[in-house]
Figure 1: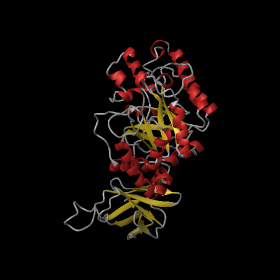
Figure 2: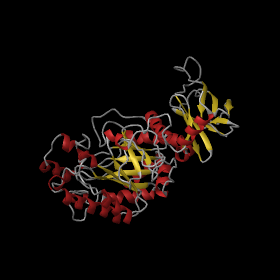
Figure 3: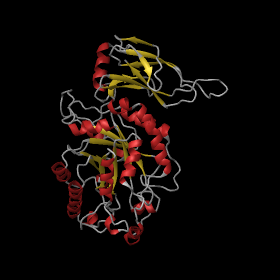
Figure 4: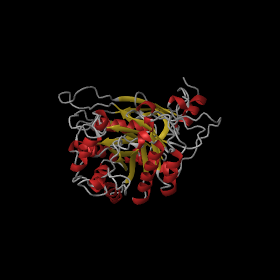
Length: 451
C-alpha cells in the first residue's frame, strides 16, 4: 500500500504532465526532456502561445510536393538516387489542380482537428510557396503557377483552422548545403523570412533536418530570432527524429516531438521554460503518398493514439499524404471524419483535459478539464444476446488512483447512463462499475464523466 505522502507527491508531479517519481529521470543527453540545472521543483507557467497550442490538442500533418506524383513516399529522390536532371522534370507535370486549402481545412475541422501543419518545403528542396527569386524550384515555376501556401493559409482561416508550416532545414537540391554551409543557411533564413512576412499570422513553424548534420552550427538562434521578430506568437518546433524522441534542444523551442512513437510524460520541474509535447504519426507507412501502401490505420487506432497523447498532455499530429494533384484521398478523409465524430462526442475532455495524476489499470486514465474529471476506459466489449454478440464484454469494476475530489455521480458520456461507484477519499481511489457497450455501440475508448 502506498503511503498518503507518496501518493500526494505522485499526484502533484503527474498533474503537470511530469514523469512519475518512481520512473527513472533521464539526463538531457539521453534524449528525454528533463531539466537538471536547478534544485527547484517549481513548474514554469506556459507562455500563452504554448497554452493555446496544448488546448488545440489534435492537428493534421500534410506531406505533399512534386514527389507525390511518383507515389512512392517523400524520400523517393534520395532513396532511389534520382539525378536532379531527372527529378526536376516533375515540375513540368505538377498541376496542383485538386489542391484547395479551404476544402482541406474543412476536412480537418470535421475531423476535430484544430490546426494543420503543411510541408512548405521538404528535403527535396521544392517549395510550395513563391520564393521570390531565391530559386526556380518552386510552385511558381510549374503548371500550377500559384502560391499554394497562400491558398492554404487563406483556406485555414476561412474554416477556423490554425495554419502551421513545416520547413526542411536539410536540402538535397541546393548544392550549397553540401559545399558552402554558411551560404546555404543564408538561403534558408531568407526563405523563412519570406514565410514570416507574406502569409499573415501563423500558428507556428515545424522544422526538420538538423539531425542530418549533427555537429554543424545551424545558427538556430538567428533563424528563431527572425520568427520571433515577425511572428512572436508562433510555436517553434524542431523535430529531433525517430532516435531522439522527446529531446529538448534550443531554448526557443516551444514543443518537443515524438515521431512515430507514443509520447512519454515530461518532467517539467525546474525547467526555465514550459515546453509542450507533440506526437507526429503517419496513417500508413509513408509521410508522402504511397500508392501501393495498404497498411492504413482506421478510426479505432486513431482514437486510441489520440487518447494516449492526451493522457500525458501531448498533442497528436496525424499525417495524410495527398494525391499527385493535391486532394486528400477518400480513405483518409473518411477515416478522419469518422474519428471526428468521436472527438465531438468527447470534445470537453479532449481539448480541455489535462493530466491530473489519475491512473487506472492497463491504458485507463483520467483527465481534469477545468475542474471536471473524466475517466478514459479501454477495451470494453459489447453486451447483448449471446447469438449476436462476440467476445467478452470487459464489464466490471475499474479502479482509479489519484482521485482527490469527492465524487457524487458517475455516468457514461455517450449515453448518460448512471454508474455505480465506491470511493475511498483517504486512499485517493475510485472504483467504477463499468457496463459493456449496448449492442450496436462501440466508441473504442469510453469516457466516464464524474460529478
